[in-house]
Image (cartoon, rainbow, N blue to C red; front, side):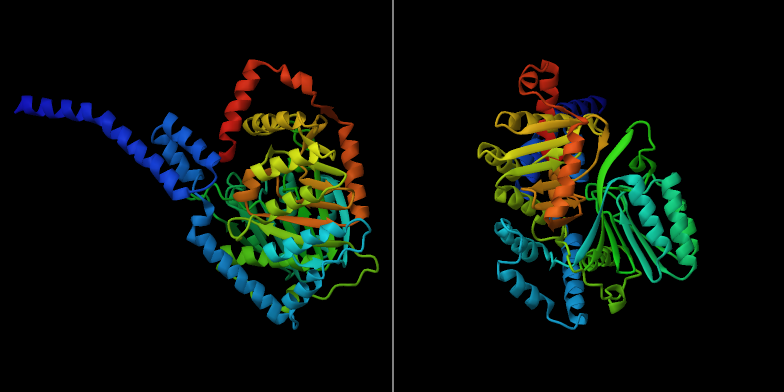
Length: 495
């Protein structure tokens, strides 16, 4: 009997490696046939599963599943569409027909030399519901303190409602100042709602928001970090006050965004304050996200979409969102369209540069066509792995004449694209695969020479605080650097 048990145990031990191999092959087959997506992404996951058996597949379940296969996101998209239709219904006019007719004229922009960008407006509307308006006034912020102070002043002056959603809200001096201001307004009877991201605020204790909820304000959490949801993040930063003022851009809420954290030093970012028609698009985006997360849903009413003043010389713009809840990769498509329509210049500023093939090839073609292409990233990154992947892409772009800069003054977190001193984009989307296909993002696309000129002027000032990446020096980089770049580049589709 004992010998039989020993033989059985020996057979099991001998059989385990074969069974483990078969199981790992099964996991690999699941990735290949279940996902059916970009081959580069599939190969990257196969490498992980092969090199780190079982653990690699668990990691895949946590961060690798295709977001568009989730029913919850399909349900959100359906619910968003109903909210959008309801907004059109209560507006008292056939908004879709009017916008479609207006945009369909293909001669919307009156700026000389910008006619070819009308196709981009058409794309943003029919792909991403980006309503076009030329009745807006913008204030630009290039650092956090002035933006935060002005937003706090606007919050304190609110009379009806304050709606915010942020990816990161720190439990520090800056975060506490915002919560206190919101709590004061909630106590006055102002409708205050705050939507935070589950992963972005994973280290922020919920008790930090107690002054707000105790005063009658409401808090909701976008996708709490449960199993297989941690990879999908609401990266949007939106604030709407009384339907009259809106904020959008790269700044979160925390001391580092005001340059108060030694590790990062000076924090260079870009944010917008909007007054005008486009504020309603930010409010609509907030309502859609809030109603997805909170059982305390918001019913649409005219009170959230008041009439705004008319500006004699307004800024033309569209608000475009993208994420697992949209049918298309709207912001990615808009970026590609911008680059392809460029005649003279393409300026890009992003803390992370891990482009997909369409962006990468569009930039190469633009540079080879004689267009002035410039890209700026931080010299001192917050994610080294992403930094090495970024350098690998920039190294190839150097070969075709792209000018690449590393910002040395502090940390550049700005997400800005400028084309031909005519069209620009400011928002939450980085120039990376995560922002294009995994995150929930929101950008303002602006068709205005003065705004583009102001953004480019700041960009050129930033270059003075940069180091130009030298092509020859890059070619002679160490073998260890090449290895880090190669590994990071291989795994970049998973970032």
